Image 1 (cartoon, rainbow, N blue to C red):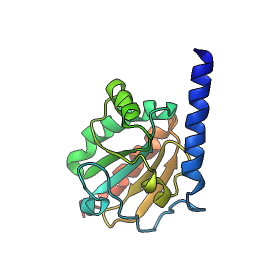
Image 2: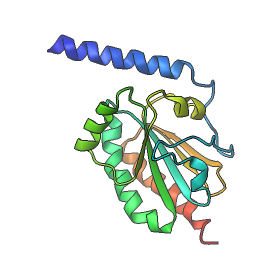
Image 3: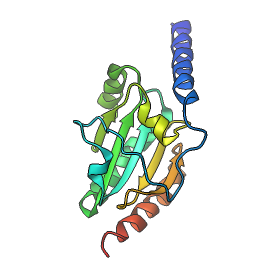
Image 4: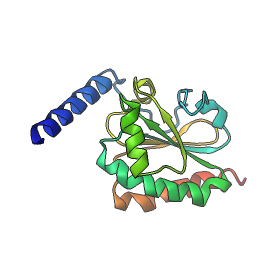
Length: 169
């Protein structure tokens, strides 16, 4: 059993390395216009969310910090969704069943798309899991965040509040 788990983890690591090896040299930076990716949420494109504050979170089923971030993102979507926040999780698992199993254990109360080929991650310059991009209503990057720890919550929420304040003007 232990060797099976070790073998599986090595295979997942190799798959991630292959996906990320073709990532552009640099990730998106604040001020850049985001690529108009297909979100995999029913042929919806990111450009259709223009005018909202969007938080795109790239995740995978094997990502430990992702398990911590999902309940927080659920809370943020519930708290700020009516004010113009749209959270979109983009799963990068090669097998949809892995993502579905994760979601059965850690449900998402926000939009979830699937990108088994990792093409959106390449366009966004994702280098680790989770990676999140906060996008302003004008379609430009406001912030990029890698990883997720409890101490990140307040800082990220403050960025949401700041971005959402621009909608009220």
